Image 1 (cartoon, helix red, strand yellow):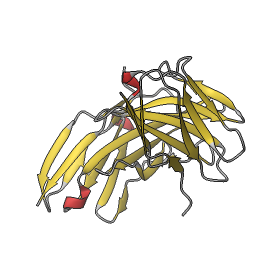
Image 2 (image 1 turned 90 degrees about the vertical axis):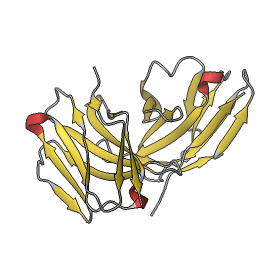
Image 3 (image 1 turned 135 degrees about the vertical axis):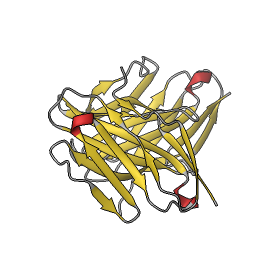
Image 4 (image 1 turned 90 degrees about the horizontal axis):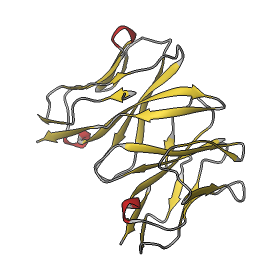
Length: 113
Length: 116
């Protein structure tokens, strides 16, 4: 069964550094999402992306965050200048249509020191 | 206000016991979708089930069953004869249409501990 792939599985970075989290959604999916989960807490929506543009973003997704689908297969989340509170598990998800379940990747654990 | 409420933060049961995880949602939409996801200790989020708002039939899949009641805005999940492998955090989610996509709202999760 096709799956969403995220790399790296774990990223450690220093405060103030830029990080790029990478995702390869399922190939025929059209809707893309990033969620994050601070350890032991709920799954929080960051941003949704459809038709090469952001559909909606949460208040967490401030100017330090950006997303890109550079080549039709990858879907990246960039954090420009990381803060300690950005430490979390970041999940990429995709769906074929609006009503299908989200298919999640295995996540990237980001640790900001 | 929370769109999805999972009031049970953590539940512990002994293997072979039945356990029900509660989920209450809030929406004004007539068309919406409800989901359950499982997050085992390894951390991935695994889709379990989707129901749409027009289908109130309960569903059974092996030891898992789901009870959708629109009258009480609830979508509860029961595991029959629980096993240690069922130990995980379970998330209930609601999906509503928003423009050209659907927005998903997750509950805060219920951690299920199944002891041998």
